[in-house]
Length: 219
Image (cartoon, rainbow, N blue to C red):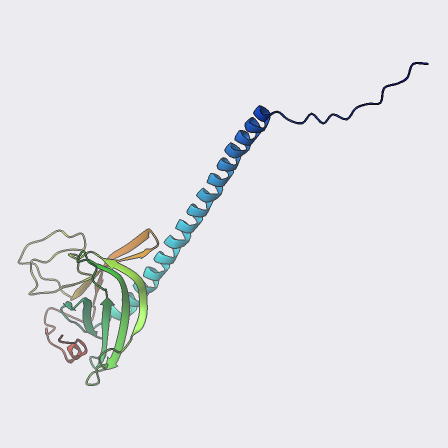
């Protein structure tokens, strides 16, 4: 009787070339998957940053519209140190408010990382130096030459409309108007507003001085 041979186990394994080819294919596939995940992450992060920046400006816009629409006087904006200020009187001229944009100066001379605050007080009792206001927006960035607040009123000529186009020097608005230009930055995402608010309780005869200017520091 012919003796049957016992089956030998196949333990010859893979050749070095086969291993290298397999590793190369796996590396390519891993790179494709990783790139896809990173792209999704970047897209999601950018969308979240944009949403955060837009939400900040939307809150600020709603507050501007509510406070400035019925203002009875607006001060000429100014800068003290690295901080921008503009004061205004509300419907009751003894109710004073101030928009304050704290913007630390960078080495390049531009303003960056600003915090926009709203302070309110009764005329005659201005807030003490260093008093913190209600934060309306943070991470505000402004160019060194672009003022965040611009008053448009008789006597400040040439008058410029929100688009920045100069008009005749004999033009005078019926109301005081405050142009606000703000840009917020979250990560690498930026968004901004450039809007002019009309103070309906002002007129061409509104005086340029008001006791609410007491809230601005002199130095």
